[in-house]
Length: 263
Image (tube, rainbow, N blue to C red; front, side, top):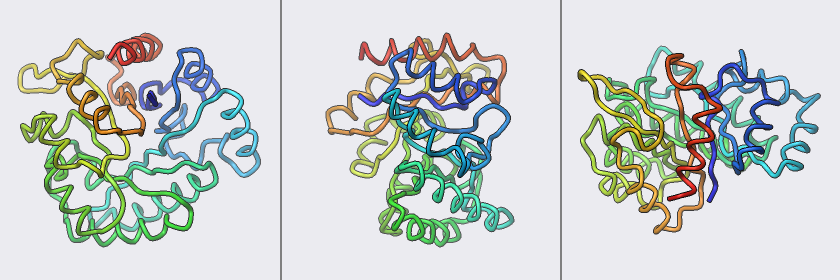
């Protein structure tokens, strides 16, 4: 089982702390969403042309891999389109050098449905799929924004004829009222990466909780994936960078791998 955590959960750690903790806790891989002050992955010093060889060597020595580079690019917003394409191409270039298979993209930057132009999104997405093909890198569209509707995302990917889905288990469940089984059936055969998290709704607001302390049917999602033969990463997306009130990463990462290993 490929268990990972997103570096979104440890905003104050440097790259060495990230790898050392992943190794010590028994993780298989790490999802890169910033390191320390650098949110833009191509700016992380360990990924510079000068250092990338040593970084790959250290990952190999530790028995770790980078399962995905998680961009912040949004493809369905006209005034962000040019910057988004530039960002994703830079991430794909870096992923190719690191032998990372996937780059995360989004339609918009909100987890809930909030507009966006699906035709623009399809145009840019197919362009980026083609760009990544020769580098062995696939952009994955996340189940956020309009694509919290997993049927819409499945149809989008069928129309695009390329790519794959990143299933964030929170968003379709919370914002579209989909069961885990419904989302899974809609996206079956298209899921390449999974964001696991737990949450509750308090006073009409979603509040993230440590695994098992919310009421998301996490176990059901994991069982569906395992029975299907899914072999991608199960990655904890703990949004500590955006919410400093959340528990500290050392505690949460240790708890998550223990919880998931029991499943």
